[in-house]
Image (cartoon, rainbow, N blue to C red):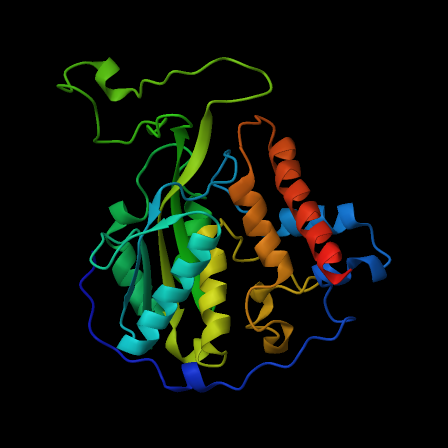
Length: 306
């Protein structure tokens, strides 16, 4: 997919010391919610609102069908660990994982100069901005991705699709049906039942590119990095989310002791996203559907403890 010079990631990536357990008063753990004095509903709503970052004017997207993870510019053993771990988390939420040699729709690429790498990659603009309505977070977010100084930066392309057939429900410039001889050949054809409450169009992630800054990611453990990548690949996560109030893997670069990997908050959020039917037209109702799944995860934790 991309032509890249070979670089190595420091061995410290796998030899970083294991993080210590987070203190209960530093960040709320899902399994400890009953002792925080805060409403479970308000905590769940706050987490979803903070983390979710769908494409402009669209609902939350997720992967459907097969996901294929590729890695470049990483030492072979490190790359294999990241690919295997992200693939395992993908399987846990019900996705099929591509076999070796599959065409990657997720690319994890590392560099000692992440800015230069990102600029080089984004020159192939077609891979990042397909041009259809509701397929990414817009120009401002794209500029933020290009200019970010974060240890991990990512860009996701998604599309509204027919929930039953998977057909893309927005026009992509340069693509058409049949002989491309009339205006109707340029417009997607969908079997949609009109409803004020539900929709037959849902959002599907098409591809994600993750760029790693070698020096910065070497400060966390391999598991922390792999699980952080899994979280941002499987969900549309806001790069500027402030999740400091929650025990989440999304905090590991600011507070490495927060989590050893995916936390119950993270797992419940992914479970909710991939359990949701997503046919509710209202964004609030759709987020509530994910919130209910987090409620169920909390209930399972309590039952297990009892």
